[in-house]
Length: 184
Image (cartoon, one colour):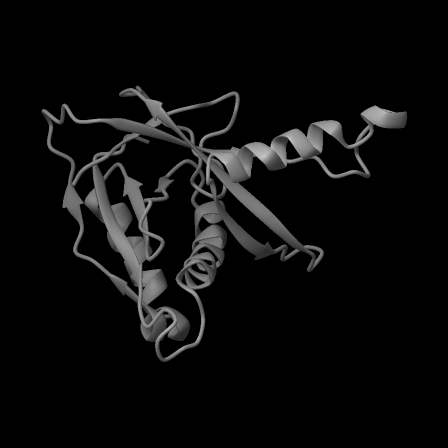
């Protein structure tokens, strides 16, 4: 996929009428996007703007975004708590900044193979990095085992990429990093 088209999803009533913070509402939007992204692999990329009320979705064609909007429009929660903005194309001559949005993994203590005082050191370093760099994170529930987990998103400067291969959350991976345009 190439990030040629995009639209923003903005959460509404965050903290005002709902009593729910914007990052929590934004996480719920992501929980609705994920199943659709999994059913349409490598078709949608996710940007996580610094504005905690928004998510930005990229696709190769306007029709792809129309298909996603049609799916989201049938979800009552989206209707009540989010606004989908009109799709726009990325300018062909876009020369602005590009950003890589990558899943940042934090190992659990259970998976740590180190012993003694080294046990948990990598996990602690990664958690300190998340806090120090103020990375965005989402609390999600696995549909397969119903366990709650945290998905952390690392933001790095990037460049124009050829073909993007987003994962099931629309993000880059360590092996497959790609940049998305920071269109104002």
